[in-house]
Image (cartoon, rainbow, N blue to C red; front, side):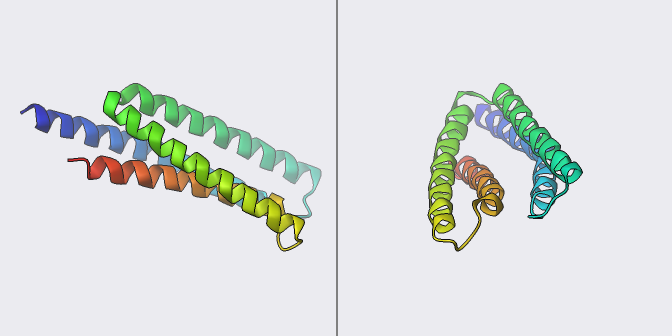
Length: 134
């Protein structure tokens, strides 16, 4: 009986994070699209910076809500998944910096996709670990 209640709480917590996270992910895509133009006017840069700031604050809000809902085990899974995603982002940014120095890409264009990829790694890893821990 306790196992069933734990499974239901785990599913409810994952569902809540998904519901909170979908609009945030959409906002990230919007911010990425807005920042992809290399020749932006001042107004376009202002809107892009505003969208990026709102995206960052929305991620912090989703994280805070997810940690408040989670029990000790789920918090551990989330923190370990974030650590792996952080490493992925660091490696991705280092590779992008080297490619930028070689003149193959521009770092400005690669930074947001790398961060969004790190977010995807974090969410996928946390989801897989919570699904298969049984």
